[in-house]
Length: 150
Ligand SMILES: [Cu+2]
Image: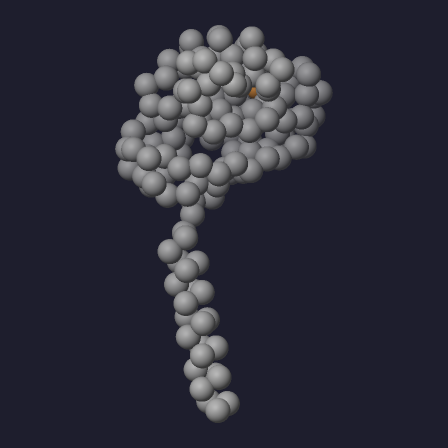
């Protein structure tokens, strides 16, 4: 009887190991700083895999002056047009919530102040080069990078 229970426990453990392997996810870490820079400009990820992006503002300047966010943009989005247009969405952390620009956003963080961190989860469903930017006014020219899904 005890033996059967042990076997049951072992097989449950095996199942949970398998489940955690099947749900493998990619964890990416990115930060922004007071000199208006991301610490990384390029990531390689797998198509369809769950991506966990941990974004941290490592700066010390006040959020109103040097806040940062991350916006992952759909394939084919014009970064300059999006960055310019996003300025009008101040009430929603410079991420438009309706219209054609909202449809260009795959995922985004809020605008973070000094020392703040936020984790977002998303998937990239097709191979290609996805731009990411900070859409805080004036930052997208410097704060941008590419996430390549293969
Ligand atoms: Cu920024």
